[in-house]
Image (cartoon, rainbow, N blue to C red; front, side, top):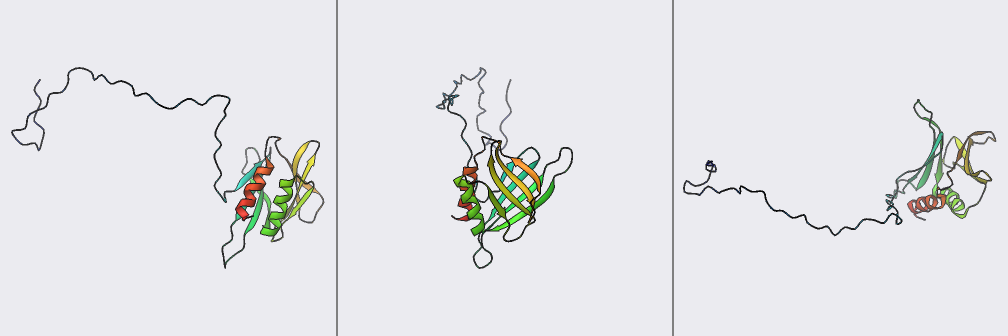
Length: 175
């Protein structure tokens, strides 16, 4: 079978012959070695100022640090409490807005393992959080600001590292 000339090529250009046989390509050896099963997965690092969620069976606490904007606003932290109901949309129960000083106090107490800790929104908010370590484990109690009645309870999974969360949020605050 004769091939047609290549378009745009000079008239005297030769027509190349194509190989009739399959190329003998050898696989390129890889230098990658498999990860041993006992080494585990590499954990992704968190981007600074990314919100941190602590979730339970029916609640989610979202910790968000708002960085300082010089000459505009000081650093602060908000904690939003959202009820997760099956088959329905999530409903916000309320939030706390804390100054950087109050947030550092709360996060340092969490990091040090103190219990109970009461967190109130010194810059606004509709709820109070109480962190406690009980026989049943670590938990956040959610109640209306200034009230003693507990609205909800968020049990923290035993493998959840509250110390790491506190350290990351303290770093976001610039502590």
